[in-house]
Image 1 (cartoon, rainbow, N blue to C red):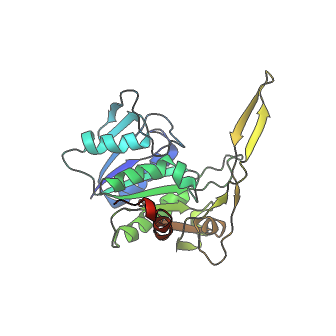
Image 2: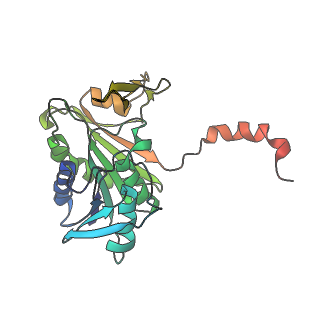
Length: 258
C-alpha cells in the first residue's frame, strides 16, 4: 500500500513525525509532501497568484511552498504521477479539528482534496492536554492511530467520503474507546475576540472559541473528546441540503425554465 502523508502544521512539525510513525506501521511505501511553513487555518485554499515551489528534502520527502491543498495536488500531479497513493493521511494536527473546525482546517482540506481525486483520505488530529503548560503530547495518536486506521480502511468506502479522526487529550492508556460520531457545533453567533494592547498602545486581537452547542441524544465529536474517546467522523463532500430543495422549487416555480 502506497501512503501519502501531508499536514498543515508544516514539514518540521512534531505531529508530522507522529503521523510518519503511524504510516510506517501500515506500509513501507510512505511518501511525505507537506508545506514548507505552517498553514493552519488555510482551509481548502489554493495558491493562484504566485508559483508553487516544490523542494526534495530527502528521498520520498518533499516540502511545498504553498497550502495543504497545493501539497496534495503536487503530490498527485508531479511527485507520484506515475503511481498514485492508495491512501492519504493528513496530520497529526496540533490540536483538535472538531465541529465547524473542519471548514477552516488545512488538515481536513488536504484530505478533502485527496477525496476529490478518488483516493481514500483520512485527517488525524490530537487534542492537546494543556497548551499553556507545554503539554503537547502526540503519544495517544501514535499508540492508537494505526489500529483505528486499519479498521477504517477495511470498511466499504463510499465515493465522496473522507474520515476525520480526533484523539482526546489524555494519555494513550486512558482512552475509553472509539466512537463513530457526528460533527458537533459551537455557538459562533456571538463572535468571540480576545482584545489586547501591544507595547506601543495599539490594539490587536486573537480569535477565541465559541461556546459548544449541546445536542442531546447525539454522539458528537465534541462529546467524545470530553469523555476521553477517539472520534471517527465520516464527512461528505456533497454539501447540498436536499431537504430544502422541494421548498425552494415551490417558491421559485413561476420562474422555472419554460
